[in-house]
Image (cartoon, rainbow, N blue to C red):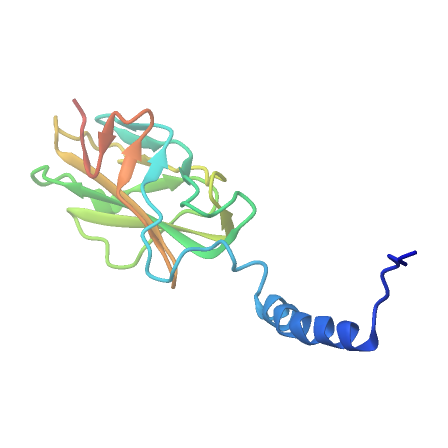
Length: 181
C-alpha cells in the first residue's frame, strides 16, 4: 500500500519563504496614493466649463472640471490646483477691463491687470478628476463690451500637471472663446 500523504519538509518551507520576501518588499515600497497618478509634466486636460456666457456687460463661467486621465480614479488627489481665467479686450478706450468686478468664492484678480487684459485665479487645495470648482461671474463695472471684443481663455495647473485647453461642454468650443455675439 502506498501512502500518499503530503508532508511539508523544513526545506520546502524555507524555499517558499525565500521566494516571497522580495515580492513582499517590492509591494511594500510602492506608495498606494501615487500608484495611479500620471507622470509629472502630463497635461491632464482639457479643462471643461459647464458654460461660458459672454455678454456686453459681463462674463459668467459655470463649474470647471477635468476628466480622469487614463489610470486615474476620482479618488486620486491633485493638490494645489490653480485655475486661471484670462479676459482680453480689443475694445477701444475708455473700456477698461482691469476695472472688473469679480464674484465667486475664492476667485481673485492676479496682479498686473491692464486696460486690455486681466487674469483671475482660484486655488483649490485638493482637487479630484470629475470634481469641480464653481466658476466666477465677472462684471465690466457699468461698461459695455462691443461685439466680439472679449476673449476668454482658461487653464489649470500645479507643480506637476497642467489641464488645458478650455472646452465648453458639450464641446461647443475649445481654446479661447470670443464674445459677445
